[in-house]
Length: 389
Image (cartoon, rainbow, N blue to C red; front, side, top):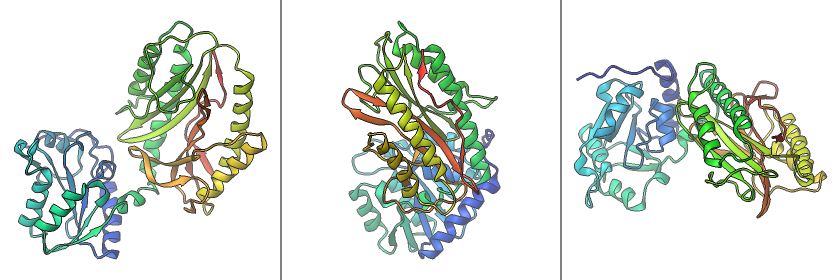
């Protein structure tokens, strides 16, 4: 039965463009077939965003075929038929007998496909870091004539520079982030529970902005007094009180692409300590953004922040940010000292300036930005202030 497709996140031509770039890289590595296992890379090359990667699945990119083949659990195959740009015949669901089976799993279905499709004797690229060692050995033993090449992060690095269509989706995600942070400023009040405030913020992340709904919830943290020295703790059932500080990290998400945003709230006048760190970090944030231009490096951007912050008597142990897009974190370039990745137009980053200074005190501010032809285009628009409630 043919399933009518849902609306696609991007046109077919965009996915074929991405695949052509991947195939060119495969050719340079003498790889004929690439197994894409990372969920974010599968999203990038197919449009699939359903969170089914807790069981084996693989996107098989054959250098000689226009479309990839997606092999996944049979009950998830209809979702792929809706979301993926490929023809329905390129989506293969493996049987439920491979789930919870101590002897075989979904990767055996992938190996069977490679054998049946005549691809078992090709040079085989695999995102090795996504596999347990025993599973990698299974690929090697069941495909003895294949030359296995470690292609971990081959696709991930290609995602770093985005197309104009991707940038537009990042702008949509950023608008949702701003709308959700505005909602946070409306619902954080003395006597309100953290959970109730979180529910309202989450609703804003889903409702979206400008007629564009959020399509997932990613990396949403609400760290309120006395837990403001933490960075990734979730909300609790506690209530906000006079004098409470609240650090919020959230990000609107569209079609898998997220735009991070962090702000600090104070119920009542900010403490002198909070005021001082805020002023120092905003000055450092602006220095970092001023250092962004094509040809500069991640390290130069980070050190513009660090140098400014130290002038105010503060330091920051964690990195300043990271490549940002599908799946929130793109594990490639980092805004940190020593990362010599050269900035290019249409790279996007989360300039993440959360600073957890003591076990009982921290502060957050961040922006999502795009590298433009001349500098930084900040995609998030929320005022850079401590929100005083």
